[in-house]
Length: 210
Image (tube, rainbow, N blue to C red; front, side, top):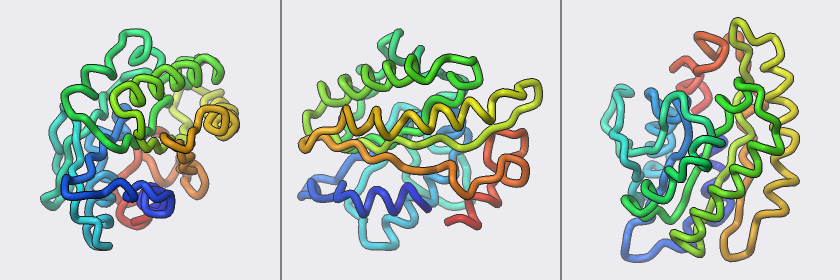
């Protein structure tokens, strides 16, 4: 699971101490409904000895076949641009006080044909808000999953263009105190066989790619 590898390899747990490290999964329905990749991430982390963790968010866990720490901020249908323009993130941050944010966001923006530069400007706003909550926030940003929904013949190419713009944006926004790690969630994912609608992952993909 690439998110697990990125979190461990990036040194996110260098901040670990007596208090549990708080991790906020932030995104849309891919993160929250039910977002069983979060359940498997929690399972992988705890299996590999990262037990002093607390997944946080204002939304509860959903069923994924086993008990896990599943609080999250996976809001179905939400756009990154709207989360930023409506100033939603500061309230979620103040309610949960995460140390790490892992973000798979932008799918609905791309689907809505919003330009990559506009989406990334919203990402910058969100990162600034994360750092206002905690100056040493560790941030994981996904290059989003492929998608090819019915009625959007251009969506697949739009995802490619958006993902291609993320590394340069992240390099310009990362800091030593609050690093941004780009996580490639696109490579190896097939939107025909690994989703049930061209967008949302089927559980079998999550299980087999654990």
